[in-house]
Image 1 (cartoon, rainbow, N blue to C red):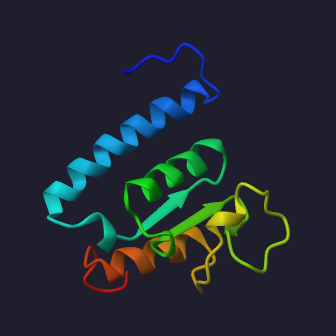
Image 2 (cartoon, rainbow, N blue to C red; image 1 turned 90 degrees about the vertical axis):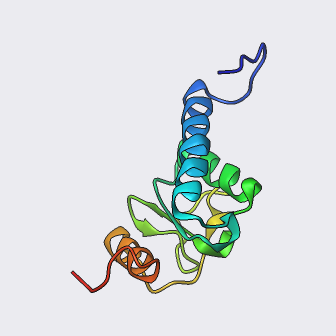
Image 3 (cartoon, rainbow, N blue to C red; image 1 turned 60 degrees about the horizontal axis):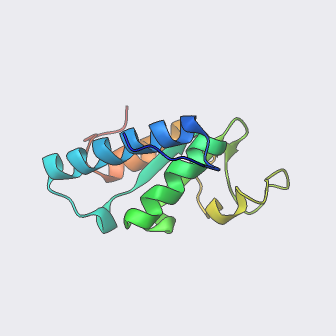
Length: 116
């Protein structure tokens, strides 16, 4: 792990994003997928979830392929309770709950062969 003398990033974010990055790269190698092709569901739209999502977008994940959820569900355009940091992750989707988002993403990625 690299050290920063002065950092405006919380230590929790640095640890989570490093782990996310390595696991993400390994997973892509295992399934022989390109980063532009994948779809991601982010469970949590706080400091760490937003930080990881930003990192993934910088690595090449398309923002339209990212569904982000908080305690109130999907970050979508009809919500009026979003912070300025959550607004960049607003998407149009019918998968308003985390359960639905996971089902849609897993089914479309061929992880599931039929609805469960």
